[in-house]
Image 1 (cartoon, rainbow, N blue to C red):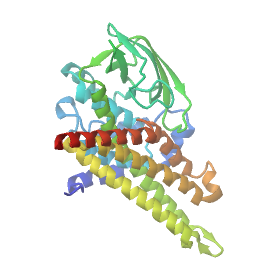
Image 2: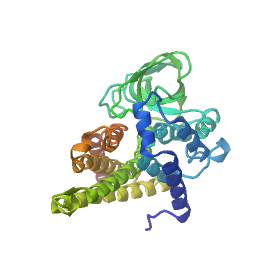
Image 3: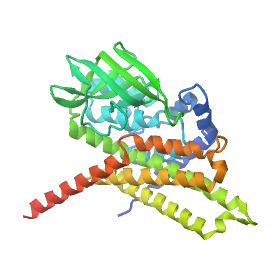
Image 4: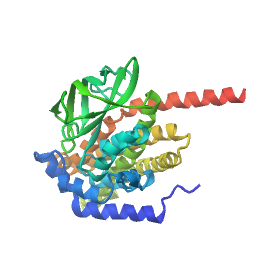
Length: 374
């Protein structure tokens, strides 16, 4: 079985890398982190012109209709550049939710705008820090009106439409809410990664348009899809962090020789390389399962999520330590990667949550196999 990408997909990835190297160097991420602008608007518009926001959107709705494998390649490059744009919540989740569960009217209303980048989407699931799953959702819908509070919501201060998890009649579902409409109050929150904004959304009778078919099982599948795509973003960023660290240790001298000559440094760098490559392999397998809608997606997505979180975070920690004292300073870029690693590991559920979920899924699959054999 060949998990490598096709020449056309690799060309798309190279085009994305060239564009981001020219238009989104690390200084762009720093500018957003240090400035008042919530995200890089010019970069967002440029990405839309490249067709990235509409990568999986059918042409009939104004999308490029590339596919999930192509979107994974784009996500990888967005991660490498630490692009400060609201890409993940809008593309991996909001757009995907409408594609999977939306009616024709909902698709016609939102997908063209999301694909062209004139509208930013987000996903409002959690209602308190540390919440990982659909369990315990208190936001509720009655008579088409949504009430409740969601926090933290990634890009909630700049998004135009939100896919909101809420209960109605004792059942949890997903609802489309126009964040520019009445009954919606937004409040910006302090974010550890200030290049990616967070917000508290308060709904008080806001109009909620239900996405039919988005039950708890559907939401779990949606999160699996997002986890796979975000894993590529994390692996891309981890790879870039490792490259920068390698260049630094090769050029940093102590007692007349590069610190990279020390055996302890070599071993730790080798360990990081293995973690990144393992995460890449897991992401590739999960992408195959996603593109073929294979039954293995549930476990593959969890494994990809766990390994990508660990590889990215471990690489950024070592990146800071290998840089020594300067690694802790504002002037060096190490903290940009560390901030993004911590942010992405908290979105979609923590690694601990996904580890427990993976165990549950493996036990369930084993029980099912045993029952079939009997």
